[in-house]
Length: 310
Image (tube, rainbow, N blue to C red):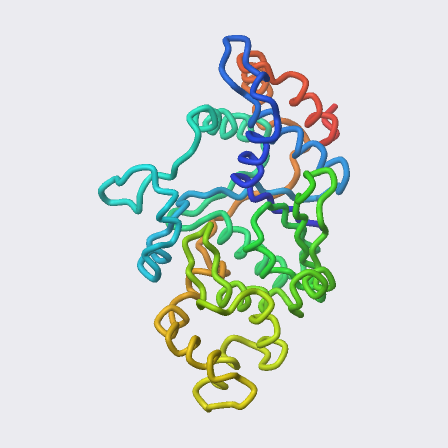
C-alpha cells in the first residue's frame, strides 16, 4: 500500500518556471503550470505506481505559530500586508491565475487535495507520513523541491524523498545514505537539527552566525542532537571551541524557538479523506469541460492513461 505525497506548490512553481509560457489556453491565458503539474502527476503514477496519492496544499503559506516564533520567517516573500493574516505571498500573476484551475482539475480528476487551515503543505506531509509510519501503511515517497522535508527521511519506516534537482524525471532519491553522503548527517532528525543551526536565508531563518552546514554536521556527529550540542555548551565541554561556545550562547534566543519553525508538524488536524488513486474521474463531465476550456486535453489524457482509466 504505497503512499505518494506531493508538495503541490513546490511542483507547480517548478512547472511554471520550467515549462514554456507559450503553452496557453485557446483563449490565450497561460496554462504552463497546470499542464506541467498534470504531466508530473502522470509520470509519477506511471513510474512509481503508488496505491495512494495526495496533493498536499498550503492552506497557510506562512503560519502564525511560525511567525510568532521568528518574525522574519518568509517575511521577504510577503507581497502585501493584509489585516488578520501574516501577509499575502508574492506570486507571479501568470501563475496566480492558474492556481484555481489546478484546484478545479484535481477535483474533477478525483486526486485527493488536502490542506489544513493554519498549516503549510509541509505540515500536512509530516502528519500523513507520521500516520503511515504509525499504522504501518507505507512505504512513503515524498515528492518535493523543498529540502526542509529531508527531515522526514527514515529508512526503517520506508520514508524517502524524491527531490527533483535535475527535474522530476530524474530526481535525487534521498534516503539516509544520501543524507550521510551529501550533508554528513545520519538521519532525518539530524538534518532538521543541522538546518536549525545553519539557518536558511530563503525562509528568513538566520541560523547561528559562524556555524555553517559542515560545522553543524560535525557537531551533530560528536553530540548526536541539537539538545546534546546545547548541553555541551552549557557544561563547558572541551569538544567545543571557545568561539563555538560563544556563538551558540549568543544565538540562544534563536535556538530556543527555531525548532518550532524548522520542524514540520506531525499532528496537524488533517481531516478524513480518501487518498486512493482514483479508478475513474470524480466528475468526468467537469474534467472534459476543463480540458476543453483550458486546452489541457493532452495532459489530461496522460493522467487518464497513467491512472488506468478505461
